[in-house]
Length: 274
Image (cartoon, rainbow, N blue to C red; front, side):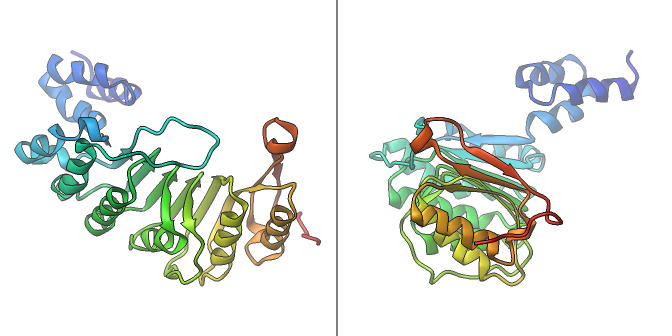
């Protein structure tokens, strides 16, 4: 018989191996709590596999209490391009209409990831509404390849989580810029690892600068080489949030066909100039 500490160490090591964790659940009854903790720590929601999830949580509500991270994802496989939308399927409509049956069982989720979504706008907005209304304990929000109706809709969604502390964005876009957006009410750590549309970067920067308290910008991506891109970079670095940026990505891909230029800085070393 292995010592309990040894078992915990082994199961911790298997955190990302779902098949191995499932095997641990049936090998020994004493392994079950630790294996379940890791096995159900993250739930991935997709249109095609969604239907079975609510029934599992309804019959085994203790599983929902183990979930700490919720991943909602579409099927858009494009890279390095703004998000697109496809015609909705019956499975997408079911997901939007029944998602609240799932999220009401997830009272301890603190991390929400939304990625590669390609739903039609009415599907996306129904899903975002459910997530912001039913998940009140989110402290980390990651948005990847999500396209909102307007920037105001994006900001409203971000501000809807009362306990949010960290936001990451990658290739987030919207159909129309709008500065009539709500304000943050708490300090926020922000990482923008990719944003291909310069006008959207400007809109985001202008909104971040207006916040009180100011957000802590750790990483920011800017497409430079155009006058507007250069102006966004200058505005960002000369703003009150500029000195705190740790990593600045300056993308020249459209001109060099290479990877973005990365600049790392210390808040005690940089003095922005026009």
